[in-house]
Length: 111
Length: 113
Figure 1 (spheres, each protein chain N blue to C red):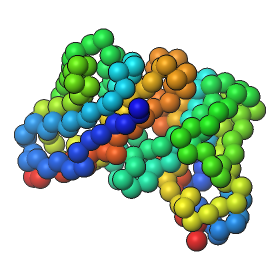
Figure 2: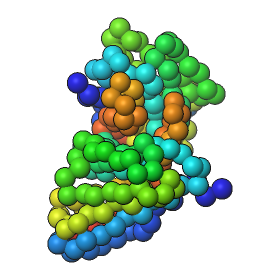
Figure 3: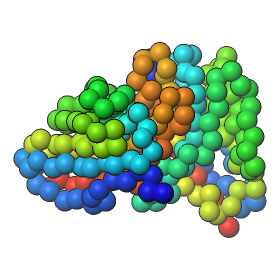
């Protein structure tokens, strides 16, 4: 019963590099989400997906790209990392009218 | 608008009750959630309430919803040191079609032995 897994758990990279955060869920949930968590802001929505090949922007999408070619995977890419993207990133999934379940997060530091 | 507010910090003694409060501003919210986050961990769903309910009880947890005042509270009875964590209130706005959650900034609960 793997549930929802994120990788890597920790990542350090440099400004300007491309980095991809992975999210995989085993429940076949239709909805998937990416949030970032910063002190004083709670969690803010970056992107979400209602189904495979359907994605849309959330509250803070700038600098991020997502794709969802398969229902179970929802990778998040920072095309050219900036220091302001240093954060903890959480992936979540759900089905209609049910709570979201979260992964353990990826702690990303951009130097 | 979408704005969920919580107090930042609450300190209680072990065995006492804890009450964590949350206000939300969008009356179209259908589900309201409480999540718990322990240090270095992800978010764990504690409980949730549908907007047509006033109260929900689940073991030591009681959720109260006052729709008129857009106020949500989480009461933890017989608080234990293991309850020390950050508690997030979140609302789901079905009208947007996103099904995403809008979170408060979190309340850090400190339980003193």
